[in-house]
Length: 215
Image (cartoon, rainbow, N blue to C red; front, side, top):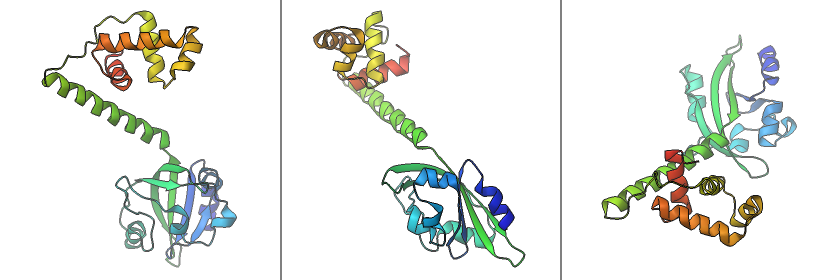
C-alpha cells in the first residue's frame, strides 16, 4: 500500500486516501492547491472535518460513518460523485470525485478519493438553466397574447455587437468605452434590440440571441 500511495501522490488530480476509521493517510499536492489545506494540516485528521462536502440537494456527504466508506468496507462498487465543498479561504468549489478501494495483505482498507475542479462546468449548467427558464417565460407571454419574439428582426451589425457584449456581462459604461460611443447611444442600441426582438429585459434578449445565434 505505501508504494501505491507514493504513486498517487504525484497525480495532477487531487488525491485523498483515508483509513477505515476515516483518518487521512494521503493528501497530495494537487489537493493542497485546490483546497488550500496543507498535507501537514490534513494528515491524521478525519476527512469529514476538512471536506464538509454536500450534494446538489444540500445533503451532507462527508460525515462520520459515511455511505462511501460503508460501501468500501463491504466491497461494493462506489459511484462517482459531484460534491460542493469549501476551500480553507471559504470559497465554494465543485468537485467531481471518483473512488476506489485498496486492501493490504492484513486486509487493512484504504479508500482513495480522486477529484478535480468542475466549478466552471457547474456555473455553465446553472446559466443554461436560467436561460431555459427565461425562454419558457417568453413562451408563456406569447401564449397569453403577448408579442412573439422575432429572431429574424434584422439586427444591425452594431446591434449584434452590443448584444454580444451584453451576453459577456459588459456594463453600459464599459461598452461605451469599448465602442467609442456615448452611454446614451449604448442605451439606445439596447432599446432598439429589445424592441426588434420583442423582449422586455437584457437577459431575455441575450437568451434569445444565444438560442438563435444572433451574434
